[in-house]
Amino acid sequence: MTTDISKFTAAFGNDIFAMAGTQGTGVFIVLAVTDRGRVGFRDYTGNGDYRVRVEPLNDEAASLLRPFFAQDQAGLPKPDAPKRFSWKVPGQGDENRFSTICNADDLKAVLEIALTALVWQGTPGFVSPKDACP
Image (cartoon, rainbow, N blue to C red):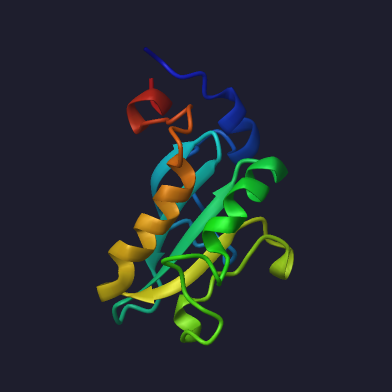
């Protein structure tokens, strides 16, 4: 079964697995694309820090994702947590994304938060690279 990727290409461009990020580096590794958006990560400093970025598909998806990145949700950082665990949210810096910086030890946990947000309650429309590259 193939997924119709037109809604994803309309939101993210022809290559839905290419994520430029704010600085336009284009070096993010996109792990997943769903009906809510996509998640990618990249080496941030070359010293073991990573940037994790979640781009919502649209404004509705951003609203659905927001609770997963709120600072007071169970399992997520509290307001007094170190800055490296803070999530930037859509609207900050005119960017439509959630993003954070973490070290290598925390990368798995941060990616689990991002991936959970994208697939919570069986979100339909997961796209694999095989679907995106006929």
